Amino acid sequence: PAGATNFVLASGADTTFNVSRTVLDSDPDPVVNTATVNCTVGGGFGNQISANDGHSTDLIHPSFTVAKACDIDPVSQDGPAQWTVTITNTGDVPLDITANDGIGVFSLPVDDGNTSNHIKVATVTDVGAPGFVGVTSVSNTVTASWDLPAPYDVLPNTDEKSDTAICQVAARVDLLKTFNGFVDPTESVTFTIYEGPTGHPADNDGAVIASQSTFGDADGVLDFGGVDLDASKTYSICEADSGAGTGDNWSVEGVDANTAVYNPNGDEVPPEDLGNRCIDVGAGTAYPLPQGGTLSLAVDNFRPEGDARTPGYWKNWSSCSAGNQWTKAEQELADGVTMRHYTLDEILGQQIGNLFIPGNEVDADPLDMPGATPEAETGCPMAVDILNHRDIGDGKNRASDAAYKLARSLLAYEANQVANAYACALAEQAANDGQALLVSIDFDGSGEYLKKGNGPDKQAALEYHGILDAYNNNNLASCELP
Image (cartoon, rainbow, N blue to C red; front, side):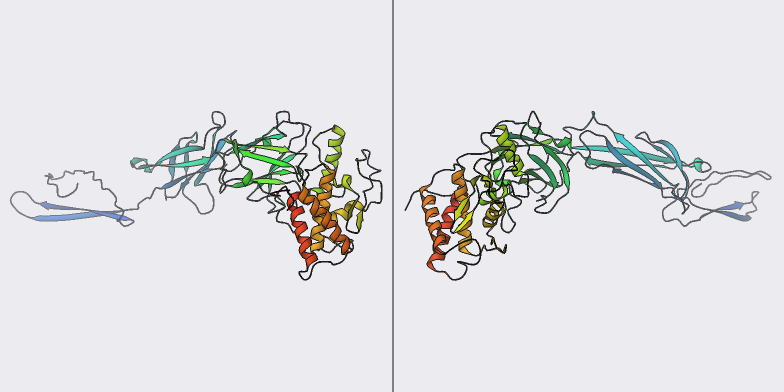
């Protein structure tokens, strides 16, 4: 017993004491306990006798860790959520473990340095209600306790630990696609979700997450297969080949989002317009993704017959473009689409200065696009060169030459007139004066003309180009003659 205890011990007798002591963190290992007995002989003799005995005991250090981690993060809205639970015996004595989450009762030996028998790994699953639509995160807690097995089970020691893991729930997007305000399942426009930001192949070539076409979609709503998106990341949602020059109205959750839409080919040299449009959503954008919810977008493509088309439109909607615009234009014509895409081939031939650009050979085309003349197959690539500021002879980029700037804008203007674009007296005058200027300098699309210096012809060419370029982009403030 703690402290001194007095008792009488008769001759030939013995007695036993049970003594307990709480082991302290500061105790040495092994801990030594010594008992000392001091006796006074009875009968008045006063003799003192003393004896002691000690015992050394090895200490045990039971301990364990409990950890829980999300296996799937974010969790699909369809479920399930899944976690990995890891319980590890970190002490120097075996443990009997009891854990919830369906893990049960088991024993863990001491780490032998060679195997992982001292670790218990379990998988815990939650299927939700089912699923986790409308749920932002899924939390799960595991609790485990240990007891000491024999021969240590005489000791009352035990411990309990818990760990919680919170898994975020994925977001989704859907997109309502209309054409001139109506759903049209005969139209084929593809939308793709890329890893962002600016994930289109023309920018950063982000990985493709999901892609879906409007063709055959009766309600016009693209759900991208219910793909799960991580709300902590950024994605680019891109419309492909809608038609350069085609108008687009984008909204997110019913709110106008056109200022956030960009042309991924706009940074190319020279800038291109292939009819691709993108918007970035998710982390770091004006349009965060709702965990457990769906971000809804809407895109309406419209083709105003009276508007002008850009040079980029004309060079890409042609039989010699790299995309599928020509095939699409053919199909629109065959289907009798009223607000169809006009093509570069239809507006040829054209006289630009002293250069005649012939109509493209389309005899092999069963539709025989109206306005295209069956001449040598040089017209389309020649016109594309002019629309790219390129020399039709050596292919050199002549964008720094004012004559080529004017020729590009003039060809696009003349194409727009064939396509019944709006009338504009100022642009018409600039086109007539520009054509006369190109004739006067013998422009035939090859060589150098107005690159150097800053003479009156160069100044005039840039002035006419500026007016026609603004017309082609529908940016002229006024069409009145000065």
